[in-house]
Amino acid sequence: MPLLTKTQALNRHRKNTSKTLVAQPTQHYPEGASQASGKHFSPKAIAISRRPSAHTPLGRNSGKQILGLKMEHKALAIIAAGTMAFSIAGAADAATVDLTFDVSNSSVQITDQSGGGGLCTLTSCGVSASLASGFGTPASFSLTEGETYAFDFIDFDVDGATGAPARQFDITATLAFTDPTFSVTSEGSGGAWFLAGKIAFGAGAGWLTWDDMPTSLSLADGSEIAVNFEGGASRFFLGPVTTAASVTALSVAAVPLPASALILVTGLGALPLVGRRRRKAS
Image 1 (cartoon, one colour):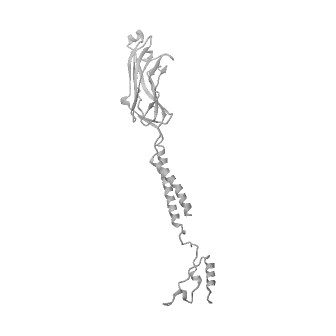
Image 2 (tube, rainbow, N blue to C red):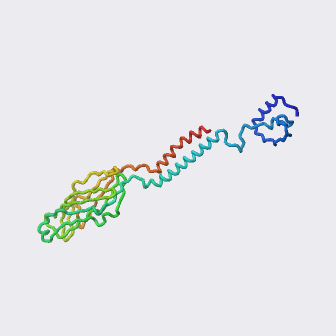
Image 3 (cartoon, rainbow, N blue to C red):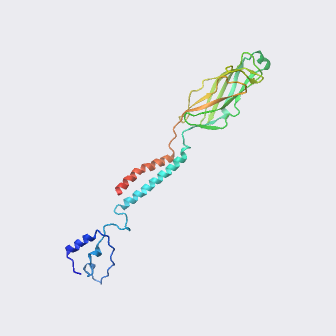
């Protein structure tokens, strides 16, 4: 092979650098000889491809790309964990007012009664009141904002018979709760005609009214509720009679973010950082 001039060797080298060449078998030279001065020297033997092969790493920015992928996978894992935990806890963490009856501290009492005419005197008539037989069952309930829960509260019963005027009475009732602990007490009055132990009179012939019912109560968590004892005209008819009470959630305090939501927010916050790193790496 004729020897190449320096210019010819350089031009051939530039031409071959755009191609991927298979490395030539290693040449063994006698001791003391150098590859550069050997007879078998060829520019092809030292040609190096500037394009990475299928077995090379990702290139100059491979470290940044790998770091970006790892951060992306970590952020996605955080988001997945937060989403799963948030969805599981979502129902339990919904904003509600949770109340439990305190039966032992709830009460109702007829404080005074009069009237009923001569027939009442002959029959020893009277009105009695007690907590309803089903009061406190179930023991607790939950309300969302604007929701009302009504329940049996007072059982009224009578003895004897009345004439004119109606048998009138004063009453005091207390509705108590625990967890949170609070109570509502109100005084009221009513009247009824009855015969043979049965409250029996026509529409509008009897009444039950309550005084000083609170329009709203603020609970320790900031929620507001309203409590109402049933009253009005024609409350008693063909007794014994049961009247109700109700609780309405006027407003419900916001529930603090659970830990699962914080995990989700952390994962979402990491995504822009991952995107910037990937753009820099590319």
